[in-house]
Amino acid sequence: MRCDRRLLRDGAGNPIRVIGVVIDFTEEHLRRQTLEMDADTDQLTTLYNRRGMQKKFQKLDRTNGVVVVTVDLDGFKEINDQFGHSAGDLVLIETAQRLKAAVRPHDAVGRLGGDEFLVVMSGEGCIADLIAGRIVEALAIPIELADGLVLAEGSVGGAWTHSASASLEDLMLQADRCLYQAKTRGKKNAVVCELL
Image: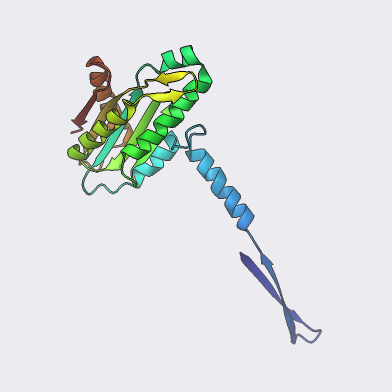
């Protein structure tokens, strides 16, 4: 709220009264919050988008290190081709829910686009390994669609560091390298590496 007031004086300059106006900015504030959230959020999954993940990364407590985990769904194109894009959207929404359930409450989960997801969190190698393993397990469970069960397993790459100067892009690049290694091993794999 904003309050404005003005002192009214008579012809001789003596104060007569104070007139005030109170302006309620609640609607404008809520509208601004909604616009800010929309700018940081993926519309389909309600996860953070790249912009939102960058903001979350910048606010991370790096005392015990920082972890970035990338997730790529295996066989997602085939699901879209066989069952249609609506079914693909349902798979992405379910994947988002499973990813949020696999991480700690204060960890940030985002969708970069398509079937690519990202997790950023505080921690070191043991946390990265634990979360990567949980994600692989969560994505190994079939998803029930109207037309039957589908399997959208995930390959996971993780990178962690104690370096305070490491950027999100540095960690994502290393995590993507690890993700590629996981994919070469076959589906349902995770590889986590330290960024030196």
